[in-house]
Image (cartoon, rainbow, N blue to C red; front, side, top):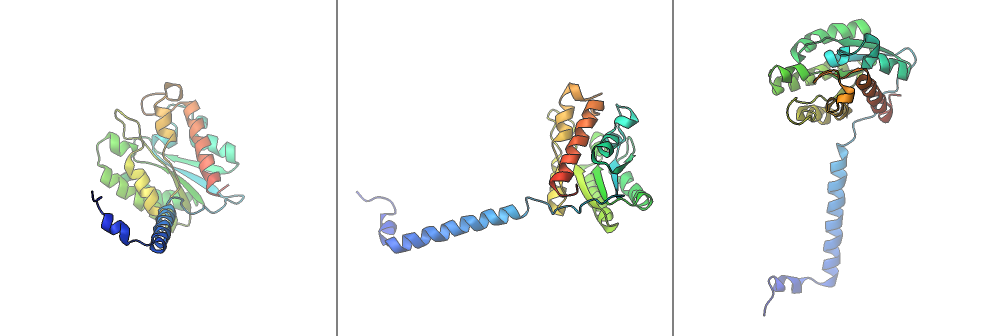
Length: 221
């Protein structure tokens, strides 16, 4: 009985088999190395005394559902010892945020921006494509101003609370550190939310903790 491919197997000498294994192993290492190149965004510049952090977004940044001093920017400022400016506007969509951003950057002159935007686009069915493009433009404007940027992902509110895919696409394409888990996790737990789309004070405290961790992991603190 002749086994399939027996002719091919017999034509491989011990030496050529060893070489083939080495080549295959090298190819695997190359693939893994290339795959790893895009995993970690570049390190953030370290914040220096007197630097300002800008929290830019909508109601999740403003702190709807809690007192002003319980918003995540307020808690973050107390945690990290830097001024954190709360530039959140409840109800804002990304198109309006894009228009507002340059004046805020000029006024506050931040060294780092925490960008959390796009939830209202999804709630109002404005179109994910437009929200994604607006976020890309915001990041470009922030960097042109000389500031670094990190992102918070927001869920597309529905049956499953997962960060909308376009946030991680933008983060990966532009090399922006992102936390894509904290907001969906909080909004899936009644202990941490004031209504179905906003955290409560405990939830905002958790967001501040997550942002601090993100900044430390990428070298800003």
